[in-house]
Picture 1: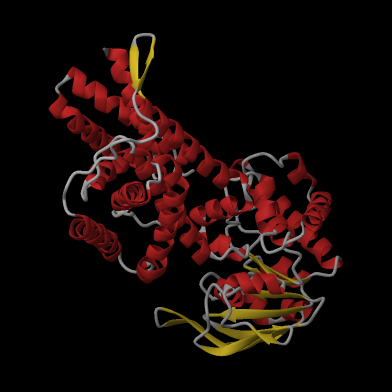
Picture 2: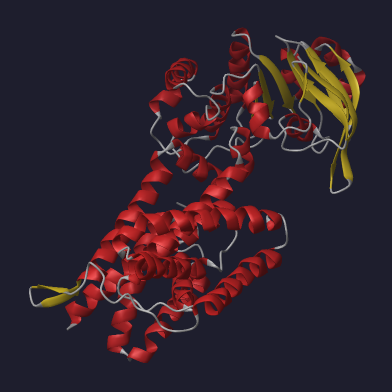
Amino acid sequence: MLSQLLISGFLMGLIFSLVAVGLTLIWGVVEIVNFAHGAFLMLGMYATYWLYRLLSIDPLFALPICTILLFFVGIVTYRLMIRRVLTAPMVAQIFSTFGLMVFLENMAHFLWSSDYRLIKEPLVHGRLEVFGLFISKPQLVAAAGAMVATGLVYWFVTRTQTGRALQATAEDKEAAALMGINSDRMFALAWGIGGACAGAAGVLLANFYFIFPKVGDIFNLTAFVVVALGGFGSIPGAFIAGIIIGLVQVLGGHLVAPAFKSVIVFIIYLVVVIARPQGLFGKF
Amino acid sequence: MLRVDRIRVCYDDIPALHEVSFEIEEGQIVSIVGSNGAGKSTILKTISGLLHPVAGQIEFAGTRIDRSPPYEIVRMGIAHVPEGRRIFSRLSVVENLYLGAYTRKSDEEKAETLEQIFRLFPILEERRNQRAGTLSGGEQQMLAIARALMSRPKLLMLDEPSLGLMPILVSKVFDTLKQIHEEGITILLVEQNVREALELADRAYVLMTGNIVLQGTGEELLETDLVRQAYLGM
């Protein structure tokens, strides 16, 4: 029973990691908290759903399409909105991304109703039995996909010249500008990658999770806890913290009471913010 | 090569530079000296495009640059070593150096410049894979200068390169600047370390509360009462 829980917690944790990596990257480079991050994930889920319903494209093949789509949603968000509040007071920045979240959720409500939707017969379905443990195949695929995506982002940021320019911008915008790095482009790129992470996570979740307008909220909040625990701006931090939070959720639910699983997660958040505000790791 | 013509620069309406003009000719070393808050850093930041003047203009090689963003100005051949080094502490030495060459295309040329730079700063080659934040203050200053050189600038601007270094390293930094100058790079140096900066300079300016109050060759300025009393304590 316990090992069963640990496995499903671990698998879910990897998805939390991917969502949080997008959030932490945007924060690290642009220093704006994206409250609409969960809404991006929701858009990724709906895009997957409609590709499946209308064009019979399986979520597995929708992955690249929706990831690219959400990459551009991130860039458009930056170009149309974030750029205007870059030098504005923090309150204005918070309200702009929070407002975007409210807008996107209500737009989904309006266009697609509040019905809970599910992709009924995805290509990947059923479960595996390993040493007496049951592992849902869609969840396994989602976790593996999330891990690969997280790895790709990390590789890009640390091993390519553009990725290093992102890191340089995150550390010192002015010094990066003196290297000839166009910070406006780096900001747009960070929003694009952030959106793509949320989008990819949405697609991977759509294989086994209910789809509804407010589905992003729970992932949004969890991602904030993960980012705080891992350290704002740190990709490895978000990766490790995502797994920790995934495990804590199931263990807390099991050891205390299922109703308390989120409570424990948020207690961790409070403890981290008070006792170690820089999180487990620094930036990147 | 560089012509700064009556620029006025403000931070939130408060002027930091009132009406500053000076010129740099190719191959010169020009020093601007002055105390803290005189506006020295503001001059460099305005030339490199981090700030824009509210009046006046800046020309580099015959082109107006005072409205251009920093990344275009770097591309034109101006490199700026900012005050306090501002190296990317989480990146390795060699990653820092390659970011200095961000505007350049050819990988072969970049590798060639890197080799030249390692010849000038052997310590950086020894530490090439070390995180830049773990270098000593003097090494970080070398890295900051080397990083700026990676863009193969025509004009190298340095903001207080001797700040916070012990005397032996200060003279090392100035020796390095001489070497860089001998390779044909024009230098604009901003310093509080007045004596060294003036000894090195072909032409020098004294800046006080946003105005240039004195100019001449470095030697001439070293002889003036103002410099001797206000900056050299004589």
